[in-house]
Length: 175
Ligand SMILES: [Zn+2]
Image 1 (cartoon, helix red, strand yellow):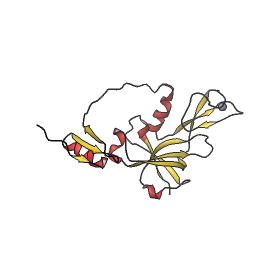
Image 2 (image 1 turned 180 degrees about the vertical axis):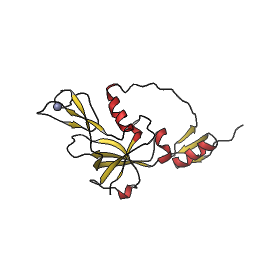
Image 3 (image 1 turned 120 degrees about the vertical axis):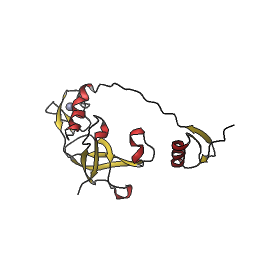
Image 4 (image 1 turned 30 degrees about the vertical axis):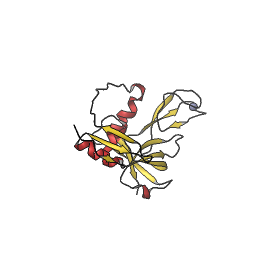
């Protein structure tokens, strides 16, 4: 009979064991034990960005593209682009956002999806831009949580080998 997988109280140790033997037990703070197995699978996901396409094409060109309400009296600017204005319902137009902004808020993620496992824990930031009415959610790199403060200047960086994914952009502290 196969031996019982080893038990850990830190999930990082579970992840390490999964990489070695493919099975581990995680014991939580209440003493509940969960058997966790390594079960790789892949999916070929064909996905259209449709009206959001200019945003992802822009990332590959080192541009952050937002949208602006076409109604002159409204003119709301979105950092996360929308085809129509949430305030007045009018169609929007594409604009280029500044590449520098400020840290509005952040969270430090100790669990991550597959794309972020290698850099976990990582900081996820809400970035505000001058003259823009909504916030952009992106990773914040080249810093640790204790460096961060609300209002900290940050600037965008782009993947030189774009994947046409939101991971093509992240922010770093701005000097
Ligand atoms: Zn509007």
